[in-house]
Amino acid sequence: MKTKTLKQDKVNVITLGCSKNLVDSENIITQLRGNDYEVVHDSNDEDANVIIVNTCGFIDLAKEESVNTILEYAAVKEAGGIDKLYVTGCLSQRYKENLEEQIPEVDAYFGTLELPGLLAKLNADYKHELIGERVTTTPQHYAYLKISEGCNRTCSFCAIPLMRGKHISRPIEALVEEARNLARMGVKELMLIAQELTYYGLDIYKERSLPRLLDALADVEGIEWIRLHYAYPSKFPTEIFEVMARRKEICNYLDMPLQHASDSVLERMRRQITRAETEQLIATAREQVPGLTLRTTLLVGYPGETEDEFEELCDFVRKNRFDRLGVFQYSHEEGTRAYDVEDDVPEEVKAERANRIMEIQQEISFEKNQEWIGRTVPVLFDRKEGEFFIGRTEGDSPEVDNEVLVPADKYFARIGDFAQIRITDATEYDLFGEVVSNQ
Image 1 (tube, one colour):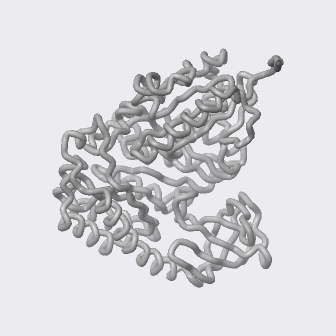
Image 2 (spheres, rainbow, N blue to C red):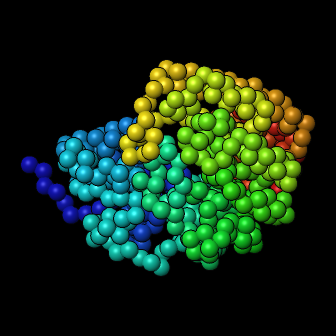
Image 3 (cartoon, rainbow, N blue to C red):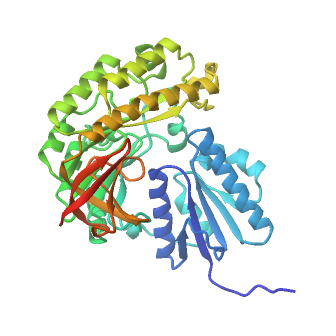
């Protein structure tokens, strides 16, 4: 008969979902290591005896992945492979009671703002002095910086306020201190993330304060790129464009999910903006920030979306020629305003519409990428993969955008550093280049 030997717990934190969840996981890891725990992230090794699953509950596919991951580790626990299993994150926040009933093998469930409770279960103290000194799980040269939590918007399709609560901005001083700590660790690029960037500061400063924050972060020594993700278009603070144009550290890049372009769908979605207002904002952005890379996300198959309304969206994409574009299919989320309306667009129609949008965008992306050929641009290199060094231009965020591939048999690029690259060829979603000089 085997007897267990006393040994220190080893924790494996599993992260599902978006970059905001990744930052939460990094904070969990930071706190546990501050309590002398051995902690790994998304490890495939089987030597951890404590598992923390940080879940996503955004749409049906994400919820399914989260539930399947919990069930997988619950089975491992039942077989004696691990000692403890904890679940945190958005799915746990939203469906805690259901999960406790359906998957009782989990030792405890925690919501999105219950880190101290999770730590207490592991007999670990929440160390306030570690706030801003986050361990990163990304490559050393870039990191995500979450500037706020929650969302006050009332989009009818979105369950995020149910999982993340009301908007809470982090003070500028705290964010600058965290940015300095990250820079000391070798971070050169910050991706600013939030549920909604443009609302930043309204709660604590009584005004939209993202431009002021950007200036403060751009002053941090060592930070060379600052990238903006998830900006809401309605009442957009156009002062942001002035800061982007003035400060070289602020990337000429804006991720602004627009969701739709038909006025009738936008009204049903409660987006508080019209197509005309959206197109005026796009024109203003491109005029005030020359060379701006504009990324957006669209939602197809919203309840009641007609073929005519969808064609309006197609026309909008063709006309405005976004640099980067992604598409979600509508997911009927209980607790949202849209849940009270019949989900009447068949799944196969949603998929077909998403494909049609991406076919339009693929052609646009190819044409835009062809315009890069012959240009020499700074590229930040993330990794070497197979026969190529792989990096990104100022117009590309990790994992979601284009990449620049440089043949490793002809050139050398230092990972985590910039190089001047002449673009020699392009496909729909990749650029190919040669090293002109390393910085």
